[in-house]
Amino acid sequence: MKPSRLLLVVPCYNEEAILNHSYSILSQYYRDIMGRGLISTDSKICLVNDGSRDKTWDIIEDLCAKDDLIIGVKLSRNFGHQSAIMAGLEQHVDDFDCFITIDADLQDDINAITGMIEKHAEGAMIVYGVRGDRSSDSWFKRSTAEGFYKVMQKMGVPVIFNHADFRLMDRRVLQELGNYKEINLFLRGVVPLIGFRSDKVVYNRLERIAGETKYPLSKMVLFAWNGITSFSTFPMRLVLYFGVLNFSLAMLIVVYILSSYLIGFTVPGWTSTMLPLTFFSGSNMMALGLIGEYIGKIYEEVKGRPRYIIEKIVNE
Image 1 (cartoon, rainbow, N blue to C red):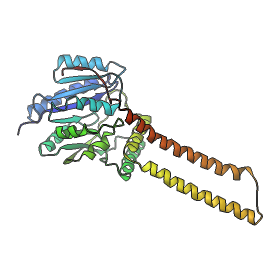
Image 2 (cartoon, rainbow, N blue to C red):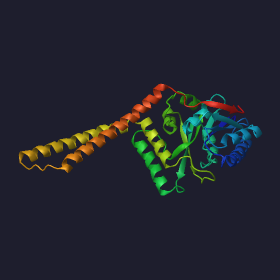
Image 3 (cartoon, rainbow, N blue to C red):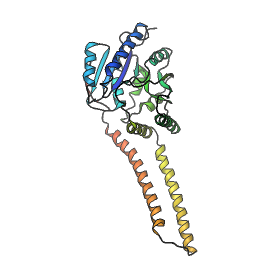
């Protein structure tokens, strides 16, 4: 069977501290699996610069100049991790047989790529890289990450447990992915929606060698919230349930007030007035804020702005 032509897409944002090291590992590994006949010799690695403020793009250009294995894609500004991935994928959808996405820090074990290629050769159209062990994470990060996947699954979002954005996709899958036009893209939920035969490769996540994580707690929370609101109306349903609960509590307060009036036991005071007022006004503001979040997403989608803008491509 003829080996597949593979494109490895690597989104990069302020990765000057680690990019040269990652390149040396990836290029050596790539040439090794080429020599073993797992992928074709015209396979490539695409480094996508997502509006980095450091010397990331300069390094990418230098790598492209000395190695035709590397394709460099420069976005006009920072569009975000998911958009950077799509920029590398969509730009080359017709040029390769299969595509793998991996982060530039290489904490996802590149040796799992071999298993992905083998499962693709066996007929899997999508192969998910799944973490088999989170012992390297802190207790807080491990518990919140696993909690996120459980909550998403409870809400009906078809996420793969302990899978991030380390995956293989066949060209046909990527062509179908191009039909999903939403701006608020959450690939971990969209890719499973496409269907086709899928499989998993389990790996252990490695320590970051250099540089800093691009997903501190604040960004992780925003990413999780974007995933939930982009795929599920369950939070809106919670507003309805919350409204029913508020109405029930209000009716109980009304019964209490009328009963107190009828038996002549009325105690005027600050607490009995302010507690219900504070509770109901606060809950109404929360409900309006949640509704506004969904309306804001509709506003972003109907404008139809591009997910990304490519400024320059090297070694196309």
